[in-house]
Image 1: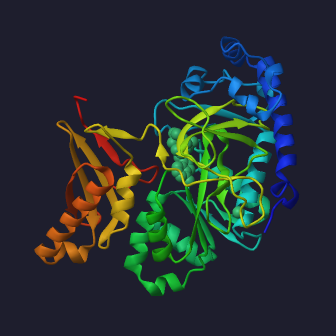
Image 2: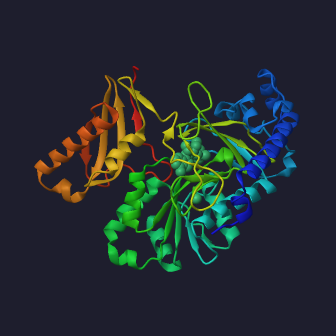
Image 3: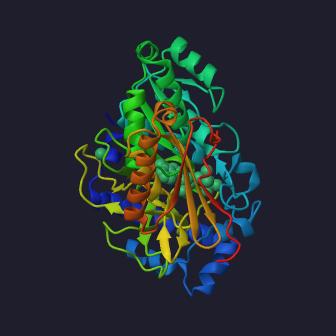
Length: 431
Ligand code: ADP
Ligand code: ZN
């Protein structure tokens, strides 16, 4: 199903023509209206007239998180303040908040992109979407809400937490789709397991949209099998409107990124050089339609690759792979680069492992992985526990080349995060 078939399946050549037109307009706009950009352009000895093809984008300066923070609260606006209708800030998982402003048209575009996303997974106006993301400054709640409402679905603005009420809402109002973070989904899965099959049978759940933080294919599989629904990956960030930037279609093989709204590039995060399609690097995004606060070559710090092949669904907007992690999530132990997702992938693929885990780093290159395991195993035979601990240690060592100590803990002992999960606790004083 399509929300805007003609634009979603626009032949590449025409799509690229449209991108170039919009890129030129965006560049002109920021150069004329945002003094900070003019300064950045000049420092790079470039100007709007340099942009003749899409490849010329590499002549433009990057915008970093630091640039947004330096311009906090409203230094990057390209319209007068009376044109603005909404403010969001990033959830601040990392560092100071960044403020992003929207005009009425910007909100409409974001909602429209979100409506495309939901429609391609089968949502119609007969659906009931329970939005279990926090509402407020965080874009996750409101932007999804607007997109689903645009389709005409019934939206339950449940927000995050209060799990008993969430379950009641699902049951009483026939929720078909839920929107939530992977960490909350793991928590919910544990509750579903406790409630048993009879409870699940009462529900009409068909799909879950999961995003806002990185998670692995293994976590997705686990959620799909316990909640008995389809999990669609949803990618977005506040700086680029929040959710609705890239989304999985019914084929669930990578996320279509709306290329009429964003120009994407993948660069090597160390050398800044562009990487060819298929290679993993940092995703760089330029807004193509933003009025209030256009952003040029934003360094997302998110690591992914472009899937160049055409998708079976017929959409011409290219897909990106599951986000491998954030360039700044990575930590180094004994000279080895490690991403928390590598550890999660191993944990979630092993039987008897529950949903919650934490990684502790201490001096002398010590790493401890605390992981919850099933109650049955925890209370059972000591030999089985020892075997699981050994297996996990070996599997982790094979994956990350470092042997961690693995601590098996009872389910429910590690703290549950209602927002974004904190997995890594780096207590090292000496690096
Ligand atoms: P913050 O950077 O403060 O967390 P946001 O709330 O805007 O601010 O979060 C956006 C970030 O969340 C993205 O840059 C990305 O790192 C992460 N993210 C969002 N969706 C996904 C997803 N589907 N998979 C992996 N990471 C995601
Ligand atoms: Zn597709």
